[in-house]
Image 1 (tube, rainbow, N blue to C red):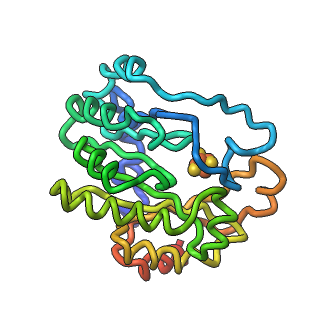
Image 2 (tube, protein in one colour; image 1 turned 180 degrees about the vertical axis):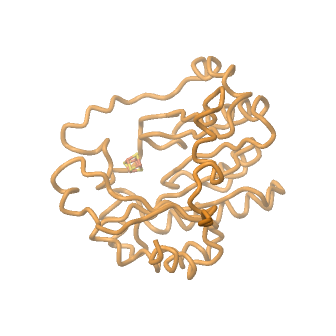
Image 3 (cartoon, protein in one colour; image 1 turned 45 degrees about the vertical axis):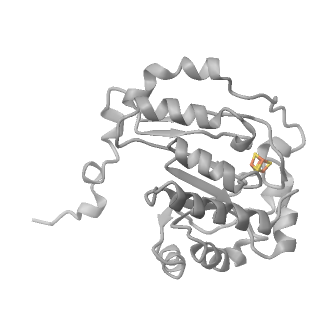
Length: 243
Ligand code: SF4
């Protein structure tokens, strides 16, 4: 009999298990639609965008409480910069009390507002995972892609988060980066991963740009990309080639 590889078995990899559960296990809460940057690849900043601006309120957050005991992951971002919502810490604190012990809370951020104080306050509140956007490390390229942002701000954010992990005695907190791959920045991916790994980053999410208008269509990349943990930055590009 031909042996089936466990690598290809959906049940063994858990692909179908989530669909059979009684409750959704991931909850995404768009804590704000406001932002302090103007990024090239963002749906919010494109011609014809009609994303209205506002923050998720504490009153609205209270209405989600019944969902927390059943979820494994709470992701506190959508389109917008979560650090602009001053209630973020209270959201994390509340959810953490009600979620299963194994559950995690995280968000993505451009990092501009991640000061030492804010990092301690967020990790102290119970934040488990944070992902900072970085699509280039050549300063000029970074500024072109992320209008109003700069590499130094990301570096400061990563340093603040690493220090806060120590101060709060939370070595389990995961710090990652997200890289939006386009024709005009793909050559910087390996160096960006090296740069991030040497700054305490333990995972990377590499995504395609979504073509919201014609400028994006010309910048799409043909690479097949996937999410991966990388123990060292050198290992990640190797995995990328294999897939
Ligand atoms: S930081 Fe995020 S939400 Fe803000 S403009 Fe850039 S991509 Fe859009």
